Length: 168
Image (cartoon, rainbow, N blue to C red; front, side, top):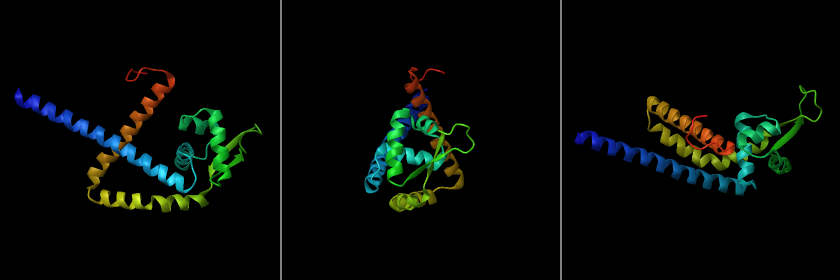
């Protein structure tokens, strides 16, 4: 019985270490993003929206607001700043019958600045990943993807007023 209790304690300790490491990672990535954003004159929210567009775009302003968890009125200001900075273009949606329908796409020319500023982190990540086997990297990728999904669900729960941890 004693070994079961000690193994349970050891597991709880490891889970706590993982959660603390994720919190530390969140802080460090936020600080890195803030430094990168400051260099290219992007607010945190603007940088986040640009990242969403880089990964999932082009998107309508409504779809972008939904993915970024922002109110559509807030999105208008974000898109105005991104467009003024030469990061995005708003284009009429040719497939839409509504002449007011717009799609937002990233202007790739500015991405080179971001890649340059993030190159130190990317190089460090390449070095870290080199220390793991393919199987270990698959486990890490699965863990991170599942953690991101849990974050998405927690965000949705809070945004819709659902109590955290209750089934949908």
